Image 1 (cartoon, rainbow, N blue to C red):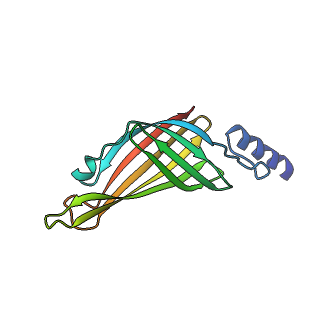
Image 2 (cartoon, rainbow, N blue to C red; image 1 turned 120 degrees about the vertical axis):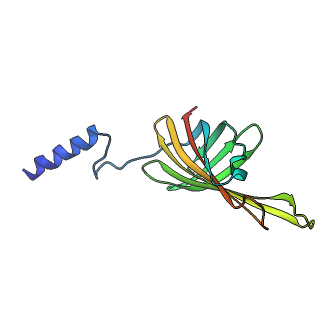
Image 3 (cartoon, helix red, strand yellow; image 1 turned 30 degrees about the horizontal axis):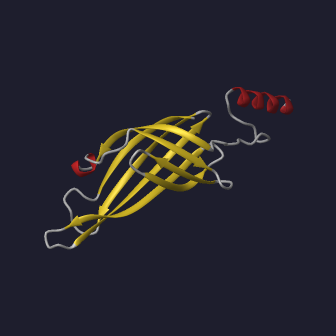
Length: 157
């Protein structure tokens, strides 16, 4: 009876897209993805003014088990993300950059730091996800620090 129950559960999991302990889930989303970004809620008007490219061509590589690199290219820039990917095809990736943001009223240079964190779920030939851009400055600037949320969806090319 126990054996029959175990077989029934394994068949049910397989029919529902799950897996039994004997069948490990594999994730193979390496390749090129075309994604569209939709801007979400911003914490301040300064972050609301950030321009996001509506479309990206993204390249995902899995150099070793559990690790991922993700290059996102638009017509104006290329960003390299790094992070982890699970056996269930969920990638947690981040990109950070520091740049000159001008000067304050005393002429002191202001440095801005931005971090873009993404959680992406790959499912066959589609990808969906969410991201948050966090921007801070080296000295007090109205509207910073701030965050901008976005969503992302795309297909394998």
